[in-house]
Length: 197
Image (cartoon, rainbow, N blue to C red):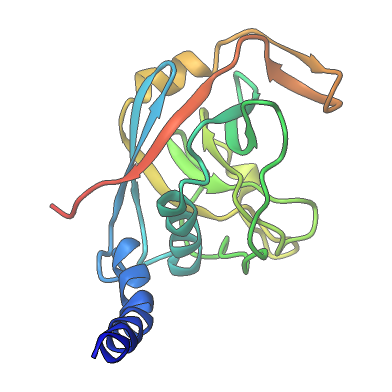
């Protein structure tokens, strides 16, 4: 009897696991919201699944897995962007899932207060790193001759926190050989997918 019950419970778990994962990222919510609890305050973003469905699903998967918890904002340029999502508190890169298709042609522009995916030079290389535009950066949008950087949401609360982040002193980080690294750590303590309205 016990082994039959164990088999039934295991089977139910196998069947429900994909459903649970799908529910975790609110697949039917067109404009999910994520709260960033940072060492400088809280920022809330509203994501746009109607324009960037692959990017939103990818980002929310990292959120619900806890990938962004206790990570650093590692690139800050006052008249450009604040970037994070890749380094832990020891300044080590976190492992990522496979890169996603670039959705930069979705009609959303890299304007002040938007969130977009960071990537390498090749267009389809975005994984977990994201950035906030702290000024209008239309030069990051696609053109007829090049791919852009995919915007997938915008800040709805905490713009003053983002503005303060953009002004922190930075330096060249010798360990990583990266410029524009905050001298004092800006920590993303937790990223949380907020309940549906």
